[in-house]
Amino acid sequence: MPGKFSFRTLALTLVAGVSMALGASAAHAQALEKIKSAGVIRVGVMGEQAPWGSIDASGQNIGYDVDVAKLIGEEMGVKVEFVPNAVSARIPNLLTGKVDLQMAVMGMYPDRAKAVQFSKPYAGLKIILLSSAKNKITAIEDAKSLRIGVPRGAAQDKAITTLLGDVPNIRRFDDDSSNIQALVSGQVDAIGGNTTYKINLDRAS
Image (cartoon, rainbow, N blue to C red; front, side, top):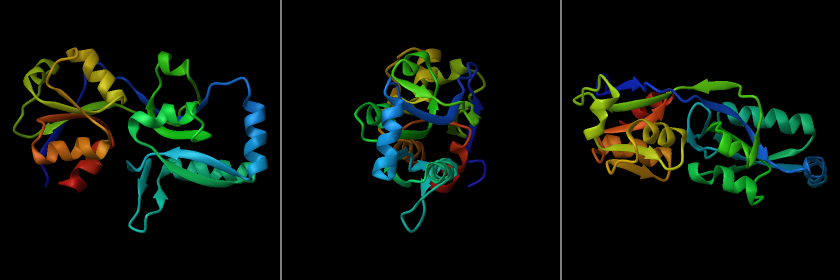
């Protein structure tokens, strides 16, 4: 419904890069050989981050990240196996070997770069605050009294915590879908998202 939700770009913008991430290891050459030998590369993707990664009506992975992963598989001459990720599992899935490559909307922070290697990002997203239209947010201070939802461990979790402090009214959810539904159902007054969230929010409402 037009006008039901409004959004504001946060004063402190943290750009979440849409890129590839690989486990940081000195054995990349051996890992590549192992992938080629197996004939398959396991790629972690998001299932609720349209247009980057989502699931269509037939249960197939679709989106920009999926298309890029298929091109990588084609270039390597191997099949691509898509592995669904929760937001908080993106890096753990790499470090535990559940996936060989991560294609995900992910904030590129120094602490993460100690654990994984990022490719050059092929797109950038701004972190935004989305709220119901009744909540007038003209400055970040206006959000301090609101219940704010974020996906646990995501870039918007980091951005909003940086701006507001780790205040009790920040509610953390396991994934983007749960975060969006919390706003639609009134569990929270606003949510931290990115510039493509509005598309998914309009669909959900």
